[in-house]
Length: 253
Ligand code: NDP
Ligand code: 8X3
Image: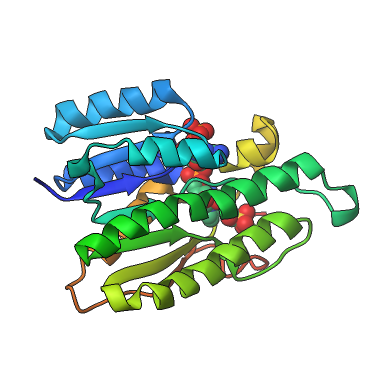
């Protein structure tokens, strides 16, 4: 059987671009997300275009029991996951701490931190059994820096950064690689979600400079997972050329 990559949040953006890149490179894929119709359309496209096998799993990463049920129900051959891409995540709201929404905070922490943990625990045990594997954790520049009103999103991504380092230590005896990928601004559905569906506000985030596109991140992830067996890339921060940090930009006025 071909190698298998399991990608959370493959219905759009970075996760979808990863699915396309890995399919092009003849991996079989397990793609997950909440929007079944988007996952099914992607499955049909990739199977037809690249003659690979694609399994879709529809679940919300926040639902621990359902994550467990769906993953453990995979046929045994599909549990031989070579690469796990912990990508499902979001920012919801951009408010100062005193005005923040409890619901937004719960959503971000439950998705970005707890969801990643639920999936990782199950899949890392499969990798331990096969004594190989590579886990990619999608952090953010928000995992390295904190900016105004980013409070809980930044905290959740700092947690991903910490978990990335922790997983690398815990999984070291089993030969499992762990890599953190930390993008700056990538034009996806991210800002539409952050601004609760306000597309005009979201579009402004990417005005006056050339942001990254999801394909840029997917190709970088593929590069990290195609290094020789003795090489692990621990951590990568990837920015648009027009962005030096969370604070410094070279935008057309
Ligand atoms: P998108 O909004 O385009 O994609 C997010 C993906 O996550 C979707 O496929 C969505 O699927 C999935 N997802 C969100 N919540 C859940 C949930 N509760 N359960 C299951 N799946 C979920 O954004 P991006 O592609 O930009 O984001 C991907 C990752 O990259 C996130 O972790 C984000 O924080 C990170 N990131 C993004 C940056 C950017 O500028 N775009 C920069 C740095 C990091 P569905 O809605 O179908 O469930
Ligand atoms: C997404 C990038 O700068 O909005 O993680 O935090 S940023």
